[in-house]
Image (tube, rainbow over all chains, first blue to last red; front, side, top):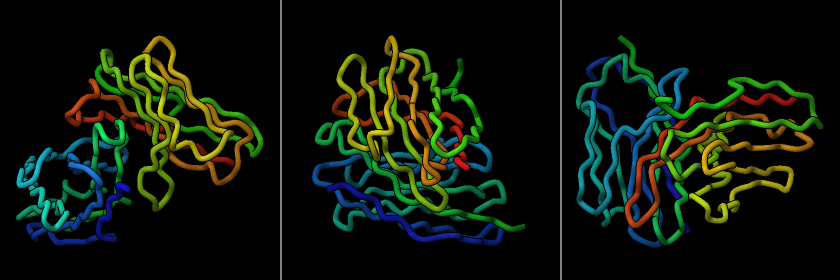
Length: 114
Length: 116
């Protein structure tokens, strides 16, 4: 079946530190992969996506590369800011094999301190 | 509206009561999803609507949960005889369309349900 596993949190970093949040997936087909972010008090919003192997999604200084060989989609940022404090969710969609269901990880809470 | 809206934003109910949660998707979005986010848990898929097709109800946890979507737009999630374990944030999302490519989901702010 399809599933997403992401690293346990919470993660606390100092401003300007390097961030990695690990995400691995299991899928029966050729999924699209996503990172969503949930800022405090707000709804989830798409951060970046990649629809095929070796694609790199990027946005707001965050990057993630779709690695089919390691079934991974790790989120990275070279220098985090306090404003990056949020919960990050890795997700996959294996359309059309499973219809339109999205599979989300449990979320990783990031706190960036000045 | 500009985004997905949900109402109420917060709902406190007594165990055994029925509740209705509402979702207004983005205009023109044909796909609508309901998820549940429990404390410390990820997003749990509940149900999916696409146009006039039969909904995918595979994620509904019990027959106390049901949902409908009227006129291909507004959706209502109903929980009957609420239990304390139903306490969670219920999220609605919509997307433009389905098909061979994955399309971005736009999430509402959620309804926080507390069953006492």
